[in-house]
Image 1 (spheres, rainbow, N blue to C red):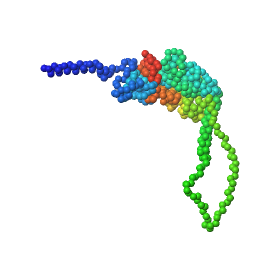
Image 2: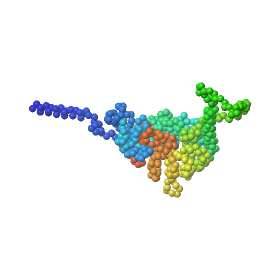
Image 3: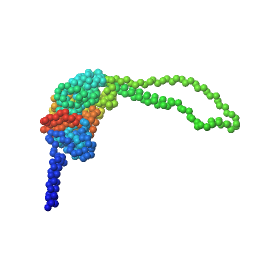
Image 4: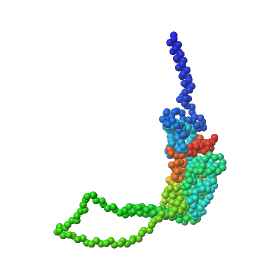
Length: 494
């Protein structure tokens, strides 16, 4: 009887310990609840030992999305973007990306993601006044950051249009000055310090060509100056290399050392025993001084022209504003005379009433290898109901095209994404449109290793849409720059 009581007591004690253990046991082991709606932050459960990492919690953030368009590859369903310190460290399918211990989790599984747009040219902010008139002046030593007034309203308007990196450039003919690249920041109103939103200073060279002025002659002189500097620099370097080689050759030879104890060799006697007499040695005649070659000096640098030299050498991107096909044909000889001069063409407001017409010279632009920056252009063809998409005709010719809103117009920013949807409705492929606002402008500006796509090593700049971004019923919900939200909306922005 005693044994029975003891066994029953043991069972009761075991059941009590089990209940207590279940009460104290981590709920994550029993099954984690799904993250809250709207992207609530959730810490990754588990321990450092389970993750195989160090005991320090990760500072990374894992963003979960329903669909991601990386542009650098095909769309990813059920995707994860892992970001740390503003950079993308991993992107892939959920379950295949290793989320480190302690990382934050942001649930956006109902949303779709695009890379942040890149604006290749713009003059939205004050201080971008016309510095060169008719191309007669060269102002390559002028930086737009020295005179730029940036207001929070303009930055927010750019963010709402989807731009996470945007160019701020001069206008005017000739060499107008060096432009800067900016990024939106969170600030409600007032002026924003340049340091708060500057991405890259002196990022490209703003230029312009105006037909019907002295611009062509001025450009010829500027191109000749830049080419002469490079020619003189090459001659100076070549002379320096030859001088160094000659000095090495002219070093006196050291006399050969004879082994110790070795006797000098006796002169050989002739067979008949007679002593051979040597002819008297001639005294060295003084050498006549040879005329010295003129010393090649290092060419002096003209601060106003050096940025153009950098464009020649592909160290600095160049953007050349041009009005229409007629102006391009007027400037065509400049490109043919100087093969190193290959800036992007920025199509400005047309000088005539028949709209933008670079499609007329598309074959020549493609042959010269010039990319084009332009607005989404819908031109009605006379006497028909058809619409001409100039950018579509350029892309079909093999020309790299970057799309921008109408420069200097806040209203154009608000209409920009709608215009992209209209382009798709008129038959422009969706992937080509997305490339024209992401990777192509990034390549033109020489920053494709940082922005323009969602890949490892790129900046964590992306746009979060509720639903399909191409659908008129969807809208922009959030804009993320360097992993931080700079625009978050309660209702989707159409």
